[in-house]
Image (cartoon, rainbow, N blue to C red):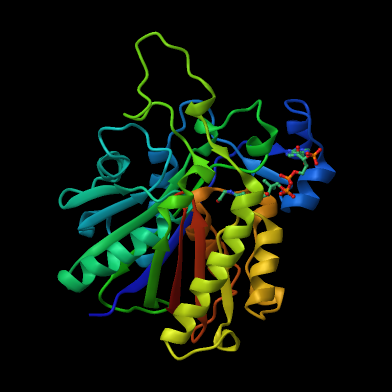
Length: 327
Ligand code: UT7
């Protein structure tokens, strides 16, 4: 049973934080951030604007695009590392807010690669249950887990959400999910962590949060692994499907750093006009990055019927993934 993306949607909070704004918080500057990352500004949620709140708005847009009523959704998956709470899952909170009356809901934890892990899970649900209507959301309030005194991380990330609807039946303008490959290496897990508050590093009542409550990473090391692993998994998925990069009309990569994206394009021998980039506006929105970019690429009519689109991501775990879509 093939799985099809029949709708996409995205939502970002209103508040724009520019590089100049960040100069007032940490020892950084616009020139450094733009030249090293490609980021000019990012959206940051208002206090109290949670992961489910962003996700609901993206999901409503995806459902509208798919012409599917919330009441018809059978499965909800939310990829995030910044959930509303430990319990309940953000997927159940989002389900309630959307008025989805039945079916399962769960969060998927794979950091920036989470959306592709959730997409593959949706494909499995559709294979098992041909009538399934799966809502797949990537939503992040990364700002809630950023140390605003650490210039090595706080300038890189942003908040946002993207969503897709996956079913067994194609519709006008839909994309068949041809293939998804997921991979990772736990021996590299120390390169990107949010440890504090987990059961291995529990917090005590009244204790103030420490640096380990926030995203901590070794950026330069991650950079190298990101380029290598995404290029390798893209080559693998192309070969597995009897394709080469010249068959791809558009790559929608995880938006972490423009230099990572350009190196990836170079390794795949793809011109940058075949690579979708919106990092300058949103920064790295983790699990939201790919569905947000995919929705924007569709909105800009960059994906006409007949297009082959390749998605690829990497993130904390470390893990990495690629997917092929046939529009
Ligand atoms: O979704 C996965 C999430 N993780 C990532 O995507 C991270 C991937 N890595 C990267 O994007 C890049 O490695 C960074 C953007 C994080 C850093 O760029 P870089 O070219 O690897 O810089 P660097 O870490 O080698 O640092 C170069 C210099 C250092 O100063 P010194 O030691 O040369 O004096 C840093 O202290 O830049 C300094 N620096 C900054 N300067 C101004 C680090 N952050 C900043 C900053 N503003 N925000």
